[in-house]
Image (cartoon, rainbow, N blue to C red):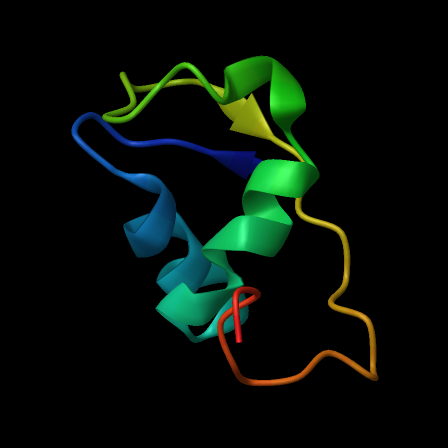
Length: 62
C-alpha cells in the first residue's frame, strides 16, 4: 500500500514504488478506481502489488 503526496502523478509514484516510470501502467491496472486522477491529492491509498517476475522493461504498446 502506498499513500500519495500532494501533486504526485502516476509515473512519479511508479518510480518511487517500483524504481522505474515504465511500471506506471501496472500501478494503474492495480488501481482502476483512481484512473480519473492525473495529479493526486495527498492521502490517496494505492495498492502496490509485487511486479510479476516475467515483466518486461518495455512499454506495453511495443
